[in-house]
Image (cartoon, rainbow, N blue to C red):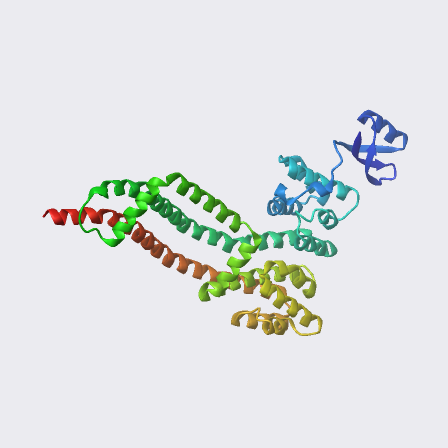
Length: 397
């Protein structure tokens, strides 16, 4: 069996070893013969295989960062903090990953090197942040910046999701009511109207014909609706579809500008954090490309190439249209004061505030318009169903 051993020699040297032994008693006896005092022994039940850690485990990186920051701030060493996280973790997959990190630390590797072995869990951005802090000895400070960065980055996303819940609910309920009317109620009304003599309004006659068609082909129509819904869900799940929808949003004047502003906000916040962590600006730009759409990625690559050639950051960003009027001024101030990282983060906060105001305004406008549209559609169906009755009543009078 394999054990992870913490031991001390007579010369006070601390050792952390991985040893094979039939049992713990034999291990302790062997250590005493070699002049070592065992401080702690932990059985390694199985050898961890790093390639098996995938994004499907959904390791909570933000929660891990918060907990590690709290333990380091409380005065624990990195290995002690990792031990504590392993002991408290209940989720099997997360515990395996934490155990793998701990083993790497005991073997003398840095935390960034240990994290780099799990690229599907820890992004290059996160690893670079930790590595830069290891050079300066400010791991707790770097983790604090990352936690703040992630929380601020999620504010707008959560606001968008919250603003979308009610309209999505309205659309779903309105769609279901319309389907119920068209697939269940209208066919039954069409049977009632079959024997009505006299002039029937054109659109009511169309609705009655639809009802007759549904009555004769109900199973086929329901199956067609189900297949269409499945195909739509599959189509929306494709990366190419999402890219197409994003390009379509860009073409809408007001919404496209806000989508661009949202991406620039994420870019500025990421660059600001990396620069404050000691990452060179060109490296930070290369690491931030994945936050942008294809078009903005090309512009960012051009800006990075110009910065390599000696162009200032503010000029390169302005030339490639990765700015707003306010951000240009703030970046020039950051270059003069030598605090480009802090200024980029403040620029991102300014953009987020502008986005939050626009989302609130758009929500207040869109929800009543959507409710009115759904009401008109449902009301029109009901009125068309009852029009023949009104005509019949008029003829009797």
